[in-house]
Every structure is written in C-alpha cells, then in structure tokens.
Image 1 (cartoon, rainbow, N blue to C red):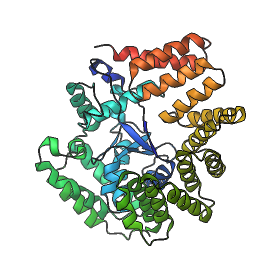
Image 2: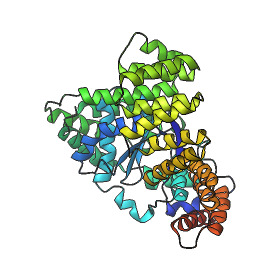
Image 3: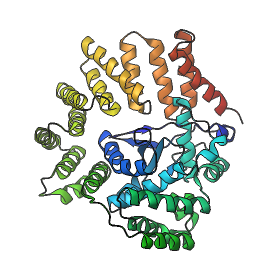
Image 4: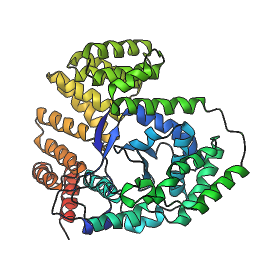
Length: 443
C-alpha cells in the first residue's frame, strides 16, 4: 500500500485558486488488494444501479475523517476513516449505494456545465486539492482559498436535501435488488445523526456534504420497514469487507494493536495482518517469515504475492521481490498497481535487462492507470536509464502535477515539450500540463 494523489479536472474552479501558496492535492491509499475487495463489494450494487463495475471504481482517500463523495460518474471516493468506522459489509455497501444513486439519478450530470472531465495528470491533481478544501482539510489543500472551498463544496459536494432524499430511495432500491439488508442504510445515518448539533469545525465532512434531517431519517426508516424482503447470504461480502478493512487497519493502526487482535488466528486475513504489522514494527525476519509462509499457503492469490513483493523489496531482498511481483503479474496480468510494483522491483536490480523489463512493465502500468505517482517516479527513472530524457521529463512533470506542484510540473513539462517530437502523444501530454499550470496562475 502507498499514497498516490488522484487526478480530476474542475475547470470552472481554476479562477478561484489562489497562487500565493502551492496547491496540495489530497492523497489516495492505493493498494490492489483493498481496491479489489471494494470492487467486489460494489459490483452487485453498481449492477443494480445500471452502472458498469469496470468503469466505476471505488477509491480510498487517505483521510481519517468520515466522508464519501463522487465527482463524476467514474469513481466513488471513500475516506479511510469511514471504512475503518463501519461495522459490516452491508453498511459499507449502503454508502456505495447512496453515492451510486447520485450518479445514476443524474445529480452529477446536472453539474456538468461546471465540470470538465479530463484524463490529464495536471487537472486531476487539482481536483482532490479542491475536494480536500471542500471537506475542510486545510493541511491537505494548502493554497486553496477559503472562498474556493466554500464554492466547491456548495457546487460539487453539497447535494440538496431533495437530492439526498432521492438518493436514499434509489440507494435502498439498489441494495434490495442486490440482496443487501436495507437496515444497514439506517445504521449508517444513525452514525452521523448526532453530529448536526456539533459546531461545523467538529463535524465530519459527511455531515456537511450530505445534509441530514429528521424527515430523511423517518422516510428511510419507513422505506426499510416497507421492504422487509429477505437479504441474500452475506458470507462473500463479509469476507471482502473484512479483508479490505483488515488490511487497511494493519497499515494504519499501531502494530502491537494489530498483533494482539490476530494472535492465535490462522485464517488468511489474520495472517496477512500479522505480516504487515511485523513489517511495520519493524521486525524484518518475522515479517519475511510470515509473508513467505502465507504466500506458500496461498500460491494463487495475486494480492498475497504483491504484498510479499512489497515486504521483500522494502527489506532490500531485491531478487526475491522481483520473483514475488512476477508471480503477482502472472496471476493478475492487467492489474496496474501490481505491474507498477514489479517495475519498481526490476529497477533495483540495476542491470540492462532489468531496466528494459522495468520500462515495459511501468509503461503498461501507466497506460492502465495514470493515477499512481510512484509509477510516474519510477517511469521517469526507467526512461532516463534508457536514454529518453524527454519522456523522463514528461513523467516527472505528470508526477508533480498529480501532487499539485504545478510550478515544478510546468518546468519539467516545458523541458519535455522541447525534447519530444511536436504533435506526438508525449508532446500533447506535456501541453496538457502546461495549459493547466497556466490556468492555475490566473486570478
């Protein structure tokens, strides 16, 4: 698991971004195992909503507060604190269903005139900076004016009470169609109900962006009471929830806390959490022993292979890490995050063959998911080793853009544009960064 700023462009807000300080984007926790688990939980909900599971991703924002939001129809964002707070798969699925309803009901599309979606690294880094500002996270969004935060929150994230009521009804319908217990939706609102009496500064962002009312609570309870159909077996959903929450907590909670809770348990999730906790203590030998045993017990799990690769790599067992990541790639050939780790490990071999294989893997990772700053960092190194300075500068520029460091991004994008063939794909991407940087400097 690692942090990587996500990217989405909000052109209507460029004018409101101050340039007195550098804009900093909020970050995502990118982990292939957690994202896969969340996609499994979301799949039946998205299908019930008429949305494509392959085109609507569930992404985790690195923020311990409680919130969930959508910006466009391609991703649902969940704060890490929310995932850790919820107590069941059904509760998490109810949040996903509610956010999916905002997409399916056209609440986001109606804001289309104010949002221009783009696939550029530059614009997408700016969007989470605005999202962080709208949630009141000043540290994560330094440089966003207070007025921008309020404007972004009102226009993008603060749905009207009418929209919330409609999303409640649609979300519940999606849950029931997917066989998920509708009572979980009431449980989630109960978590937030008491926060409306708190001062704004003490409220979790969810309360500010999803206005709660007693009428909504009564309506939702009535809808649940009127739809008492039997929920489907939740064993599979419970497993994926436990896996996502367990791995997230192992990487974010105190290691001793994790080890106490998994002591004596021999299931996959407990062993995985123990290996992560030992790695973070750090207990090098214990972590390597634990993850090697787990990988041997589950040889067909690509995410265990990826975790093995990460632990070995971070303990400087480079050749073994390459082998572990390689197994993960063979088991999940199109997973961009595993490909990125494989390329990173290959670079550590510092051989001509390793560098060539790394470049290929990192290019594939970037083509499948351009939202991982570590991949762009490693790709820049691979291009430099291959004698491709223009492409190296482009990767650096896009990485800085993802991080919201637009002046640095523009500097390297200019270097890339000077070295790449005019009109080429790389040259065009460099222009995207330069244009976004120029827009951000305008009042």
